[in-house]
Length: 384
Image (cartoon, rainbow, N blue to C red):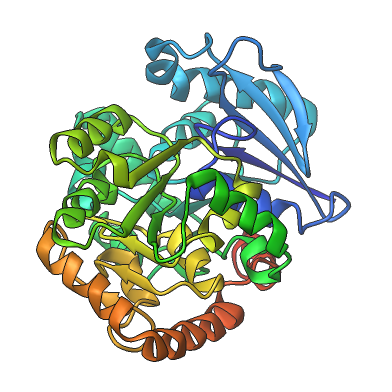
């Protein structure tokens, strides 16, 4: 039995985005008798346990309970925690989830945790923004060393595969994508549950509901979708599923544009329930400004929803205009509205494209297959 230590800034049960979901879906499919996973993550809520087991991950939380200083000190505090845990568990490798986690990974090595590491790239922000945040010389030097010395760098899209070379790395780069939400693939949502959600959001006969289940942040282009409503008939409504730092700003925008009565903000929804909200709607609209992959968009395709998206970054791996999706430039509400009208006006074409997209997701974005690839192509090379 091998042991891998994961560094992830956030984790279940409170914080769940693409990175956290990927860790859980992968580790849940690898038995503890094969690999036992430990994780150091940040304590955001003082009521959360410092140590607990979630699936096949022994979670160790460090920090001071959500204070900003906790995030600033996380690399050092978590590296010290790694040294302490290593003395007890004798880890065989470390796994940095996203670029920023190379800081604690490399610091842990300098503190005596001398084991190989793998890096997963699934950053959603653009390259310049990610590395601009770490432009302080000591930080960027540590990050660059982490890229250069990684045993394996896993990327979830072809877009992210170009990043290691830009950081001066010739480490092995392995493309293993993220998967769709298993509930979308299994199609086990009952008609009664879907109808219950439709009643909850106020969907009526004749309505067309567009939906996005991403975080409420600038990157996701949700403001563009709200603006697009002003170019669409009144029976087109928008369901914004999730929460984030821009939630208040987006609600104010809807009010200012006079479409507040056509937008429903759900707030945070448990990942196990998000599928129902997608299936309760008609078109998934995601004019993102940047994406490492777009997990929620892949899940929408798994649910056979027509996808209108920007095609930027990793989205381009699966969203092909006229074949699997409808592509529009970011920051163009009028063009976005036109694409939505195209979907509405061509139901047979929308059905055909959605079925084709679903078949691609079944073949390439299934977590069972992904976990096997991670074990064989990412973990095995550093666990020899």
